[in-house]
Length: 235
Image (cartoon, rainbow, N blue to C red):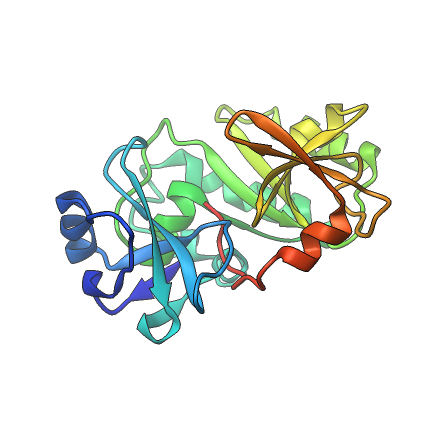
């Protein structure tokens, strides 16, 4: 999450809706989108009061006041001091995740509505909220370990949406565990079908999904075309 100076700092090719102005007046925080950097600006998204209210924009680097990554929320145990902890059982699950993930030595953190509330202090969580998690996975995760994670997650009364962040993009933990062929990898260039989310180079050709069609391109060509991205929370 990024704290911004003002809604006036946002750059967009289309008019910025009134709800975006109202939202950032109450809480001047945005999330980092998975997209390419444009003219040195970070791709960001603004969350509205409902899931249908999302707005993409770009933010100049000098307009960033503060950055909070998901891992920081875990290292500081932010949910322990949340005023909603006693009312929102979903926050208590983070205690159990912390203990379990420690055995895997994962770097991880909450994203989505829970991450937003813990980072900003502004209400976004309710009893029916999913728990969105990013797990940093710089090296391949064994399928047995992935299945162990899923088995652990299934004991909870809420849905856990876990993304494995590889050096080349993000892949759903559930999809990775079940996949026997190609799998959807979310990259800064767009969604891409790959055989191995951790392989770079020409041995792992991509099939980018563009407006409902497919464009085959080698990973080498994709990496050459990609503009370096500012790493942060991917919403």
